Image (cartoon, rainbow, N blue to C red; front, side, top):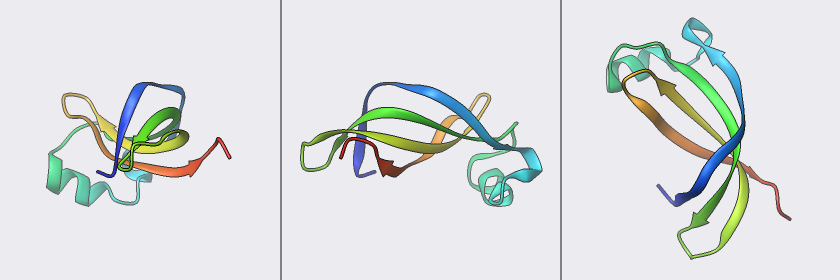
Length: 78
């Protein structure tokens, strides 16, 4: 991962759940079965070069497994 979350993720929204997730087969194979959801939210991140920025973050989550595949979609503090 090229960034570290600093603090909590806010304004969390559900993007997709269950069979609506494009990568559901890969998630189940890599991390195991579960009630998978794709979510997005806004959080503060520390980049690999030390800069701190506000970004929109997307990730997958399942009960008992937690957050996986966190990805920065765009920066919000231009």
